[in-house]
Length: 459
Image 1: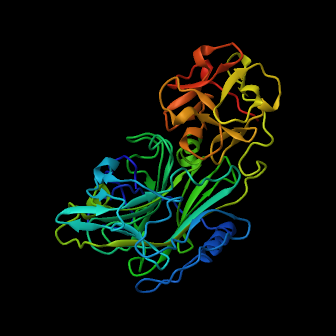
Image 2: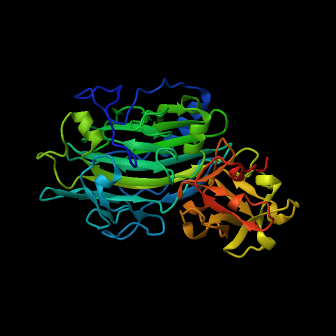
Image 3: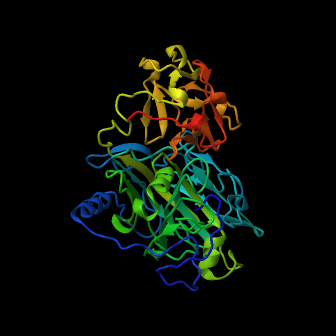
């Protein structure tokens, strides 16, 4: 479910009524190994037995051996109530705002998004005299990521909607900031109630680029028998155990059906897209480039039924510990060296929120011992995070220290030229005015590639 791009036609290994199949490209060959077989067995343990009609509530599966649960929701709550507000927020407004051609209006109404009282989240699309409404929820921030040297598994139990042409259910992940540079992983998509599933990544530049945007690199629609009549598990594993050959693999009911690897797009593109935390999203769109491309028609049609529901039984994310990095960090920390040999410094070693972060003579004190946490792409010192004041996006917004809160104002993605890029603001960490004066507070500014935006992280 692309954040911005309008899909265009692309090859699809599964025959469809037309040659057009948006946002899906020919899959690469899947290779099986003993390791892959272990992953299949691990995911099979998460499988919810399918059947006809609405299944009973199921407890979120515990973390498999060697993994840790980092996010989950079993969607328990009173029938008709909204999902947990501490875990989920709404994206609302016309679907046309999302750039995918969909025609519904997303709302926060419990008519469109609610708990069923039996441990399921229901997202329902309704036709109100030709005007469709539906729902889209996401984690309020980039909730989960794979630590360097480790793995991230994100899985959900879902029953796809019926209703005919135009239905477009999706379970996906999105990086904060610029799309598609900062990444998207579509874990489950289907269109037109076809009992199929597609997995796709989006990355790089739009249009075109190494990730073929706005189509992305994907499996194409694959058979998913019974996916409208019962719950099935849809999963993704981002594997960073070999940090120079990272992969993403998709699973249906524990069986791998598609994989992509870092070498297909290049290390720099891959790292900017996937080596950081992402948001988790569920939505049910109506119409748009993908369903229209598959049927060769304009959807929804007059025959499309109102009230189709995507039901979610649970969602969970698990990680394994990164090798040698304490869960994705770079060890005990060290100096971040900038322009003219000055170091990034927490002024007076204060841990107060909003304390200025400055450039200062390198002195090896705790105020200059920064740890880069790759899973969240955050910089930590003295237990706090490098933060853009007020989440600002304007040139000259000051940078300070703040309690780590996993917001976009604390995301710093290292670039090949040495700059530290903040996707939310589309700006880089900047030594203000090319200052060589110790005590100058740092800021964000348009990324220029200048020497005053080059920072050497701890090794």
